[in-house]
Image (cartoon, rainbow, N blue to C red; front, side, top):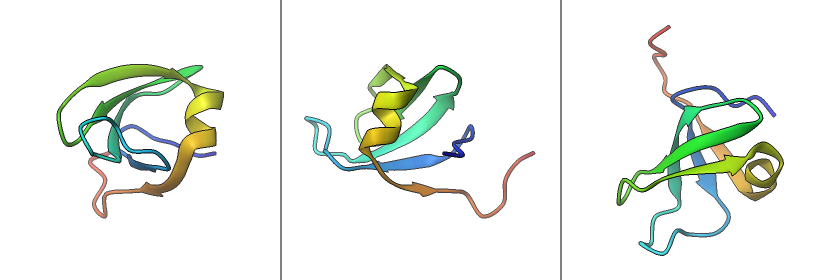
Length: 64
């Protein structure tokens, strides 16, 4: 699965705050993602994160 920095992940399950959108801050063997509702950051192993992703939303104008 092609996940890049700055992507927004729409997850299958909602965070306890009610948000289901997460911003990707780091990629690799695991992801660092931030809840876009409450700002909570977590590290998630890649295989676990990819299993729970419903869709990937990319910004239209990437800053690279």
